Length: 378
Image (cartoon, rainbow, N blue to C red; front, side, top):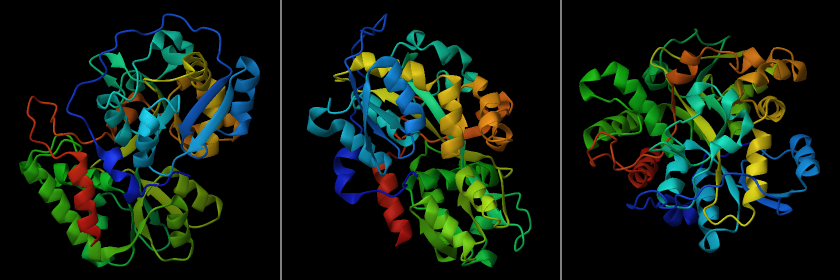
């Protein structure tokens, strides 16, 4: 399962977001050649399971070697290690992908070589987390929303993220231990304090950023635990240590399967979420195997296998019926049959940059998010 903590020894290299633009290379392949026999991946644990990797290796002759990363910062660091090129691909989340793109660590890819690309939900064909100026720096993979979890026996069904900032809930709350959590506070403020003018929870001016940090500092005494691992939050809800929290569908479903009385909602203010992308190293040694992997892993069957195994939602809309064959009701459980408006309502993680996206350069960048998060936790 994916970690969310920040590994301090890796921060210096991993946080760097060069001021230079994206890669100058305009060369993208127009066909996929013979595989090189090997493919090296940096991946989240659970993303390279035998049930879908073995068929790929048999079909292509590309032997997969995976290195699991414990955080987005570690992923960035690994892709830059040794001058780059040590790994062919990375399953980057949105809080890492822009760092890799602007750092010129990853290459533009030709989505026309990915047959299943046409079957993606429209929201995931050119998302801002992996597509810049019309150029695709990877292929979308799976996603999930960050939801509000609650114990149905001890809490009323919440409708707002407000419950996570309410002093009446002191000692009941669990929150992800992740600087990107500042975006959740910003999203809440965008609805409750419209005068702040927050349009994007990842593009915050100093005033907007300070307001989000202030809210999280007020929340700090209420928090039972900042959870670094999904399993930590699961244990908290099992033993009654927490009854409210920011969570993922994985924890909700795992707890429900264990007969723990929990449910989740996406509150009226909306939700943040993650979208993972398979990105190709700018110095990949096995690019043909990498393209073969992108063409394979985006097909409906491996999409469904990974979604059911990991507890997330595939970007290929044809995966739904296969999910239900693998696990009855899983398509609806993970919102794989939701309308396009549902996907577009999620504010997916992206690396905060000084560039506000509106021509101004006065937004707070990710380095300062990490510093603030350390201060928030005290």
